[in-house]
Length: 129
Length: 185
Figure 1: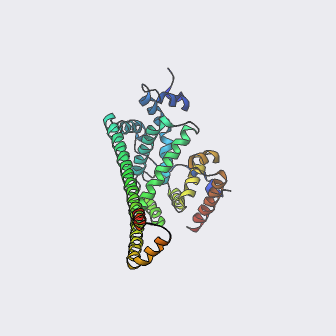
Figure 2 (figure 1 turned 45 degrees about the vertical axis):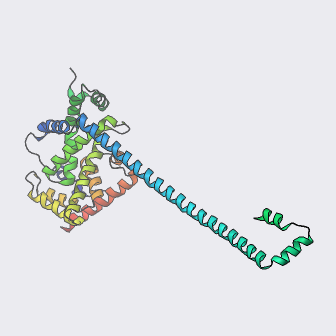
């Protein structure tokens, strides 16, 4: 509820003023500002091209970083596979060496064993090595 | 020949969208609403020179945006919204530019009021305007629109994007504070 002072009609009066003929000139000044601020078609085209170029560069950068990341991951995976394969090969060679050593040091026992089971030593070795 | 001011907003917008009549239609729109837009901004920023810049910016934005104006609200409400944003952004920039707290900007506006060559009010009106400048930004805005412009809450709501209930509360608080300020001094 407004009190007496606020209901005073004098307070409702506009206490501000404007220079003479201000509102007569304002529309033409506004119009001038609108016309001068109009962007030329060439400027619009350049602006559009700049935006498109920026988007393409950004997309390319994203693609390249993704591509780099993927190829690095694959390389890492391959090197891990190679390590596993190398380990497997090493183990096989170790087993063969130990078998050879066993045959060398127990040659007589092996020959006896094979003779007992009617196995020709040369045939056996040919099938194994 | 139809008089310039007899065009409805709908007709003016349709004319604006016709390239051959665009400038003429916008001139008519400016003539129709310039005073209301000017006084709305002037009561917020006080200085005539600042108001003049902001009025031109308001109409420039209207010129740029009128093609995409969807006519869901009234043309005047839409202009009021642009004008309000321009004025409030201006005050916020002023605050940020000079690193001033809220109270200092309001003091500055109060000093502008005292030295303004285009303030023609008497002592009581000056006191009243200074009391308004002590209100928070939103309350001052709502008070001006309701008290001076005699706008309906629904219209204010469309212009400032606040619910009618919140506007009523803001206006009520503003009135209480103004009465208190006027009794203090």
